[in-house]
Length: 484
Image (cartoon, rainbow, N blue to C red):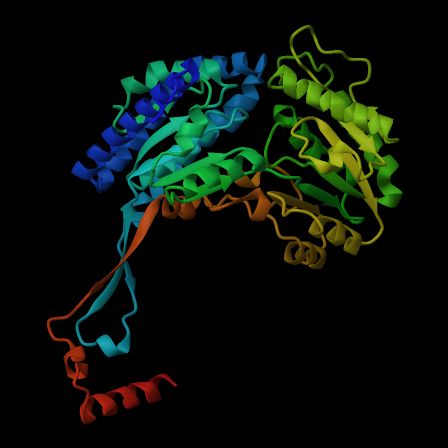
């Protein structure tokens, strides 16, 4: 039998696997010693997350900005820190109610004295794979619900969040022991090994392609997954809706984080006779609110590869006959900053990259329509999106769209804001993901809702034991009549 040749790559992979496995075993051992933390312990853990974020706010914001090249501080505060802190407060205020044992109806044949209960219990060890676009929020918002449900957590950060990751590796042990919370840096193949761990649940946010690979890895250990993916989320502006109001809301969403948001508007349907109005209002909004793309208020594209991908998509649209309008005409990104102004693409066609792939940047294809059915036919011929944004004051038209376009979530007459509503579940459907978190659904996702039947001191089932005689026959017949 030939021995396997140990290469440096194999040795590196083995060391990662050893480290991850050791951490999982340490957390598993701690979980088995204390499998159901009480309310006070869970509240303490949540307040500790809050304390850590508050005490290290500036260092964390600076680290994220360095990872981007430039990240708007206000956007980081709004979408990262405030969302996390507000979410923790919401969970603490509702946690006692969520933790209560639920009473359930008992089958009539089990009377008298028996009872049914559903007991929310911790799953154990939950893994989280975090993307780069909102690395604070997408690490600590899931962690809020993981800890609320009484679990322990292992978190794998993105390779594009190197400064933040190294900061967390330094500060997290000051607040939590490794058997409660462990952070891992992506140094190459860590994510692959991480997704192969026999965890009790894995929470992943990222692309559809990577999500499929993660799910396949988890299947080897039958690890349940929550997948928060992306996709091409559409908006549609109805004929009745004020264009200026639609523009101010859509442009805010599309320029936020330079469009690098999984629930962002990917493309827009505009009434055919209102396209000139749309372009005019969009130019006016950008002129007023984003006059300088090199301002620190305007976020950079995360890395050079993504910047070049967006530039290539614009070139592809031009070459294939689209009209590309740079709303920041004449402005060039400062050296090394990877700034890209918002671009509209008029008359896009199906062979263009911008209509075939998720954009994830400040590029917006505009499709025209005459009848709402055209909108439905187009959207429903594609993968189900993570979000859907109908703009109309017509209640019947709102219902028409919401009933006929299935998406992970929806926001009527605005965009981007529904994931920030803490009492609403957030999640995808089909190609845009599976499972939910946020709200009570987030607590349930990371809990085992354990059904327990308590038998009474006296059981009527004793009369139905074999050998089956006249009494058993009569009892079964009576029960059948009662049920039928």
